Length: 167
Image (cartoon, rainbow, N blue to C red; front, side, top):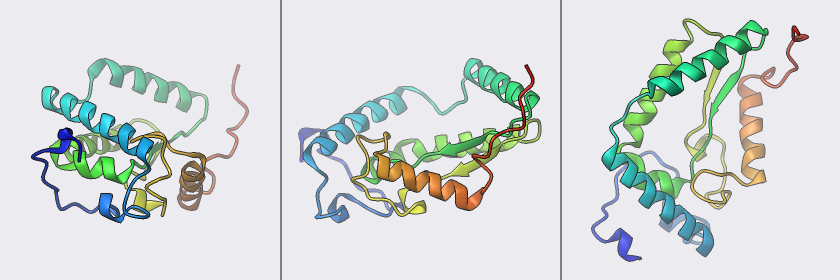
């Protein structure tokens, strides 16, 4: 393993795949490099930034929800799957606290705004392949198709056209 991983210890978490169980037991070389870069960046960010909801960003997010609801649209927010090797390495270092914080924030907003939440953060929730990513977070088309199918199974009208928008 690269020097980056010296001293790393695995965390027992409910993630469907680890490096030793991905496909043939290895991630493709480019994907491994990209995911490793994301791990380094994420761990550095988590180390210097406590979990919190940014007030300015939440203001703009809530303005967007208000606008969409005012236009008669009920948006669907999807927490997309993360590459499982990446998630396994960041989970015990702040991801789980941030995930709980975001879900709590969104559920709280549902008292004031109409929107759906679909949490597909774990790749196992859609039955995808750990190699179905360009990097730690950006999905390849086959993984994106699985996400769309999963959303439609839970919310069959999620992508239905909104009623005529007011102009």
